[in-house]
Structures are given as C-alpha cells and as structure tokens.
Length: 89
Image (cartoon, rainbow, N blue to C red):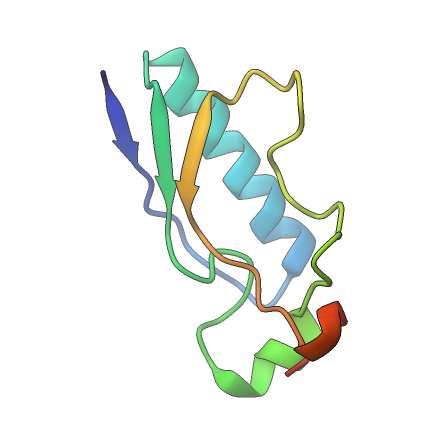
C-alpha cells in the first residue's frame, strides 16, 4: 500500500482550497497512492473565526471525493460542521 501525505497552502477562498485539494488528490493517485491524507481544515484557515463561514452540513456535496472520481481512499482533512448538521458552530 502506498500513502500520500498532502500538504497544501490554505487561503480564505473556499473554492480555491477545494480545487487545490482535488488537484493534489489527482496528483497523488497519478503517482500511485492507494490512500491520501489531507491536512486538517484543508478548506479554510485554521481560525475559529472562519469556521462558521466555511462550515458544511453533514450532507454537503462540497467534498472533493465523489463516487467514481478515481481519487482512491482519502482519510483526513476536515470541513467545519455546525450543530444539527447546518453551517457554523
């Protein structure tokens, strides 16, 4: 089994962060990774003031991993989630 530990810059632009994560996951898969680990809070700055703005509900479609996407197994990385499954904390 081959693992990829992904490091990436995180900005205040959520879509840019998700796009970067997708790119890094595709690169890891192309290099033979069977599993990839994203940084904690990969989609937003690690600052509690940002968590409400960047929060995702439990059933959000914002995850860069989609069935059939060929990303392999992904572990790690976290989107802030709010109480009751809604955005924010």
